[in-house]
Image 1 (cartoon, chains in turn green, red):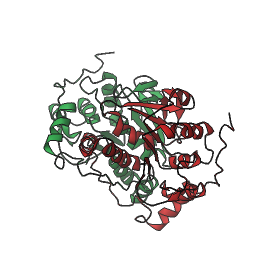
Image 2 (spheres, chains in turn cyan, green):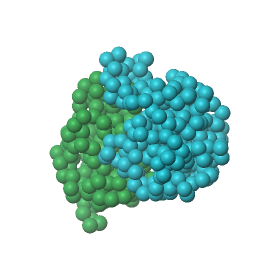
Image 3 (spheres, chains in turn purple, orange):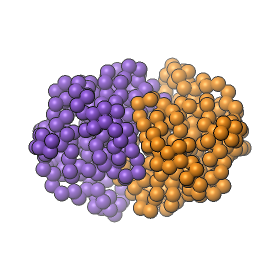
Image 4 (spheres, chains in turn purple, cyan):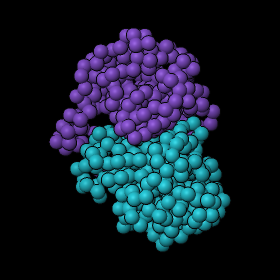
Length: 219
Length: 219
């Protein structure tokens, strides 16, 4: 069971490390960080660097794909879009967290499909032909998209349940002590003060329109 | 405001990336991954590598310290224990996630103090002189300890609240869409089936007794 976790410049760390932690300790899982080239990839803050063990060219037949979001989604990396187009027909599950859904959409995987992304970036999904929904985890056939950043933890537990049944998911949830107790209840725009919603939307929501990159155009 | 995130061999990724993501995007924060030597540090799964930007020797006066847990806590790294002893008197906040508390305890920071750690490793804390409590986030003076793995997200939000007040914490919580909706309610031993509790306790709880390393002993 090969699980490919995609990296690209300016990805968001928690988007990919949440699912990584849920999936990596399951016996039999080969979890691999993959990027356009093997080697270091720097996150959107510029302060965290993860190592991609393999290049997209070396991972052609993954069983599960996870695409994280990031602050680079206004300049989609063509290599990742191409790779998703190539491997999606072979996967058992194709998944995204946060604006990683924009990559799935750019690869044509969300055409006419219900999907979610970070709440402040819903227009990016709609522009690319998906139907944005406000659920935290959206499962449609073999495609699972999750909402912003931290939602990848919930998504990966749902994925484990679909792959192996509830006992495996419950065991991993217990192992990572995922019994969340946030000190506030402001994690979604419907629950947060309107002023804060406006600030966050301005900070991360107002990217330009997103042209889907042409396959192979930047190679 | 310098925030030092400690790394050591076999650390657990989500333990440190949870707090990283909550703290890194706050304006004015200098977040730095730090380890015995600058360079790559491999996590407990062997599949994820983070880069430490600086060595312990280069970070002598951090405002905030975060120590993650890991599966290496039966062989405590003496360099990290020494560094904690040296910097703790200068910090504004000293914090840990999961078995990172064992490092704080080994450095004498939890002597006679209430603290928490991963639920399956409570005996390790007690052996080193701390009073284990079952709360998810335990704040005692400037020392904050959090329970297993995923609890670092909750801990870091509490920390932001103490540092800047609720609005900053609420804004970051909204930005990372931390509106948790786990598919099961089995994230704590009191809530999970007893059989699963036994399995997880055997897998990660039964380390040998923990002698506190002697300062400088391995140098």
